[in-house]
Length: 306
Ligand code: NAP
Image 1 (cartoon, rainbow, N blue to C red):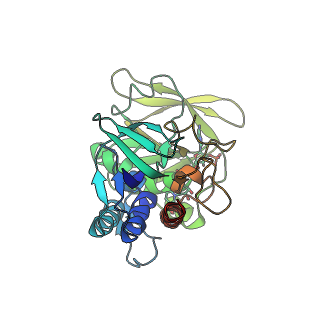
Image 2 (cartoon, rainbow, N blue to C red):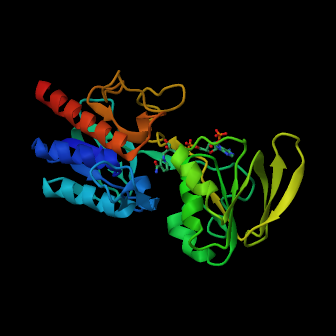
């Protein structure tokens, strides 16, 4: 049996790996088969991670996190956790490849998944003009006209990044003020290729096999209009990934994993949670990393006491 299994490989998971490995706990970190590295793998320049004044590409930063975790002996498995049983003293973790692992403690660092608009055919058109990842798909929209939906930091970042490829980037936001930070908004508003469409929401995706436009509804007067587009990037936030554990650990009313005070302790002994899956407020790489450190120290104390 293992001392500790970490589920998730964003800044929280890898930091938990670094700390538990350095504590001699030989952690197994299950990183996912396709989404290893988490949300920062889909990001471009990370400018606000302390210690890197010149900024760094998201995937490079995650490669560093991984290398540092491995350097101290974290074992990394590129597989998906499909089932867990966390209630007993022995925690059971099953993966998509059919392996079963046992551990005395588990750290949940499963992060958050992109939110959908909830429109008909949204999934069907994913990869056919509809995307959630500018860094992955931006290249396909050279000399095209595209739009980004959202008013947060992600939408600003994606819109700016996409101007490298597209001739025109509309930024569609449902209100007339932005949730994004001032510096990100200013950068978008000062970009000549970006045109903001305020007080508007996408109500219909148009096109058969490939998206060729959207219908917008004005949120102030209810009028609708059509906008021809080659691509639509959806950046309207994330929801915590809790499906694995939602019937086992207590959740908050907003469906984040509930932890005790400033700790990472969940409602189950020996089960700790960190990163975006517990955080409705801050959700930054640096806060996730700090939270991974807390979870590692909590797990270490738990194992010492038991
Ligand atoms: P977010 O901050 O939750 O913003 C989501 C945006 O999408 C909001 O403007 C929201 O509109 C809009 N929205 C939500 N549901 C919608 C819907 N169904 N239809 C239309 N619009 C909808 O999400 P985020 O931008 O992904 O950012 C998540 C976290 O990561 C934040 O803490 C952010 O600071 C952080 N982040 C930081 C950076 C950076 O610092 N470089 C980059 C990216 C992300 P309302 O404003 O009307 O609610």
